[in-house]
Length: 83
Image (cartoon, rainbow, N blue to C red; front, side):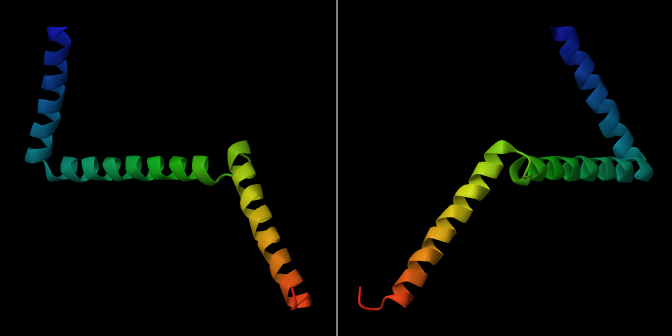
């Protein structure tokens, strides 16, 4: 197990060395990091807001149903001001 730790340490040490030495590698590293963040945000958004997802579809239906009940009560209240 220690060999794997040393291998990971050497890999990250080499990457850190290259980033500090070469400006282009540092810029490439930042761009790859930004691309990974955007990919994660896009995937997270897709999972949380995709209408084809049955859980999200239920949540949209529930929100719409609550809004419809609220509007219906408001209309009934306006149509019958006495009670």
